[in-house]
Length: 122
Image (cartoon, rainbow, N blue to C red):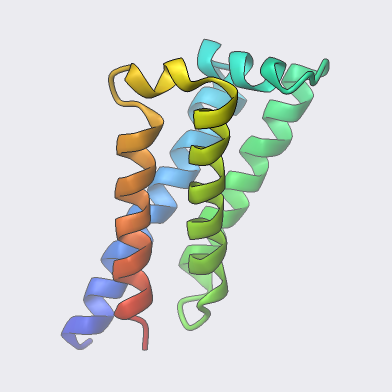
């Protein structure tokens, strides 16, 4: 395995972990207060259902990142999602941007991993 391939796998693995963790832990296993607040801020009444669907979607994206290593699509979708979700928080609930381990630090780091995965793809 050459160096660029290893770098690509590390970046994809980091992204996959990030999406899988955030789909599973604060959405499917233990619905976090922050997730609940953001969903309710959009006027969605079936909070748990929406959180479950979002969690499954994030886990699906994580698996796509890992099991389609030659495809650029999951990287592009991940980058679009991270950008869109960051803008969504900034518009809907900007006070969350001041919290520790907030969407700015998470999403910008995720976007950096997307860039690394994109530029190191075979």
